Image (tube, rainbow, N blue to C red; front, side, top):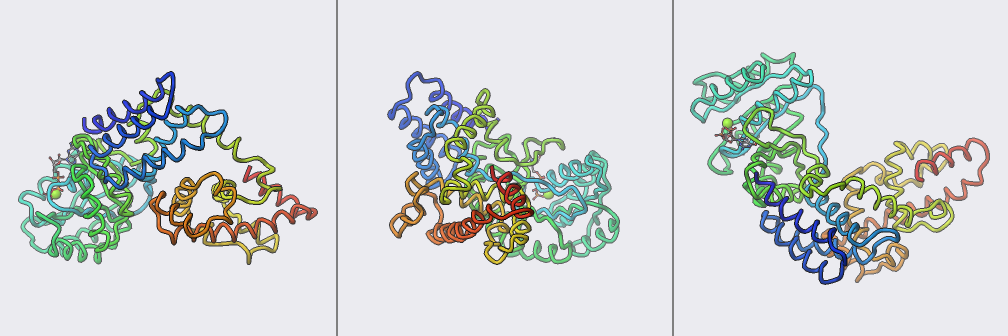
Length: 440
Ligand SMILES: Nc1nc2c(ncn2[C@@H]2O[C@H](COP(=O)(O)OP(=O)(O)OP(=O)(O)O)[C@@H](O)[C@H]2O)c(=O)[nH]1
Ligand SMILES: [Mg+2]
């Protein structure tokens, strides 16, 4: 299996460090080199690899008390790999249309069958439409898959007009929950293919627009993802043949970089060989580290203990260390804005912060990770040259670093009002407690 080459390399690195009696600079240095070699051989872009190892190195200069360097190394490698490879997909289990596109032979039709099985198994009435007028026997292939997974299909043998087929299929399956449309591929990503997919997209108006890509594309997957994304606004990539390509790491990281999330991965030729993509699970499996999850929890708790106390939250000045915690807590509480509004502070609330959601938080976290401890505690001192360095280190733009600082300052202002609110009696006092509870 393909992942195993990457897994093998990663496990080697992690077990060498975690099994060492003494973790010194030399061991870290050589382990990071090995990590680089492993990722590059999985076709991860060299720049991303260098950023990743630099990040791990940087974090090791700031190991929280109570955590051993080797544990922190494993945790840092885990975190950085998760950030590199993408996110977690949560498929909508409701009424939807899904359009599959891509060049020849990457697994569109197979994926159409797999997805049909996935959704129908979850109790949704699912149907397949084949609009492929190019591949000989495309109709029969879909017919066979549909039969295998037990869903109806629609296609018109001999019809050359894919748009007409799609319209008729839509009519036929108008009362179905999930309609999956397979499309024709081409040798390469050309105008003809993009025009056809744009036309189908305009008729179908699908909620999900997935590009199907083989993992053997490696980092070139990013280029295709971008091109299709520009054409029809992809909502995701389905990465196939993750089971048989050594370049899965490259393809996953390239899609994440291109800003198109990997939603499902294909892990074999059979209809059940489809997984919802979850970067954390995927990386845990790659690392295969015994007891990884308890190590992660322990390091997380120790880190939180050392970084965050109630005092930090309410009495001391807000720092970037506590800021990130608040972003997370705000999300957990659901609607900070409601609480704030009741306290008459709604004008001051940096709404975007709450709304822009997870992606922003991931970016912010990445940027904050690239700061030194001193910078996190003294954000006012982050001036031009530090902004430049942090941007370089985190692989984000200077604009984003500045934006984070701006958001931080806005929150800091709001926070000082909140602190005053602590003295408010009755209802407001209770609200404050609630806020504190959410944060702590
Ligand atoms: N090992 C493995 N093989 C896969 C996977 N997905 C698809 N395949 C195989 O890849 C080959 C091509 O799959 P298709 O689904 O026909 O590809 P397509 O994109 O529809 O091809 P065209 O219609 O010709 O453009 C078939 O042999 C599939 O069995 C996967 O996740 N793992
Ligand atoms: Mg096909």
